[in-house]
Image 1 (cartoon, helix red, strand yellow):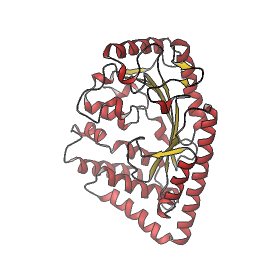
Image 2: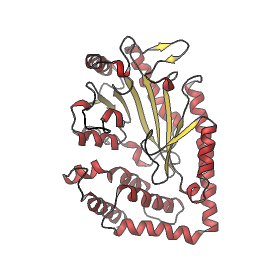
Image 3: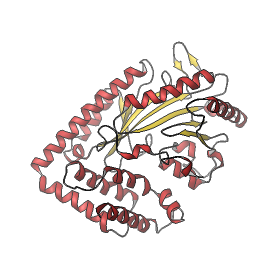
Image 4: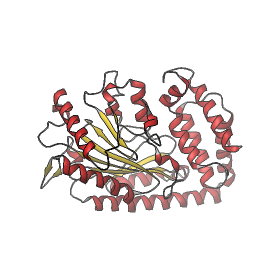
Length: 356
């Protein structure tokens, strides 16, 4: 698998150029679509999936937006390569078949023209998706909607006048839209207000997950906030509602940071610099420990307690310290017992280069 085919490795969102980028790492939009007349999800057989992939491939080649896209046949990739794509947020855990040792479904593929891509034969026939730097709901949706409209003219999407776009899981029917922001909330965690905020999200129709969405744990104080409803409201209404709530959460986070700076400045400085010191000098680091330490350093950068360290570098460390990335970098396996030492060495080198 040659990721150099993608100009930015498929990760342009890492550059921290978007609105509120120090706190909001990325905005992600996903649209679920199925082809009319083809069996959905678990009912589809291998031949059905192959036919779907052929139709999507033909449509992409006829599309202005995807004509120059890169194709990855996920079902033909080794597990390490599939895990690498997942760690870059380019494919879901389900499409990459990482929960089990069996191969991915036949016909599984990724069509990508960064920053947007299409997962083929995941839970639905198509999962259009894109990630943008910072808090950029409108920009992200506009780009994805253009591709959705174009593919909709080339492919017969399954659509019902009452229920909207039809999907394998009823919870995705209607718009098929799932919008999410990946946000860093250490202030609310330290002030112990995070529980109240998360509970409030569920009461207004939103949900939260970990770094990799559904089924992933929250580590490093990174939360993925997204809409829970896809039916009964327009795309614009769903995005507007999510945007309003995220802006409130950003305000609460800023208030929490102001509080801890005023009431516990020394304690916060100690936490931040301890985290930075460990990252600069540790000889073995687990990924979870790295995430938590990066959270402390990121807070320090946000509070201007640490200067001369870019948010881009911190974003890059979140991705490149994961098992598959380190394994590819060093020619190892993700299960190699020496990976914690490799991770610590990589972190030290990157931080040393930034400080010089």
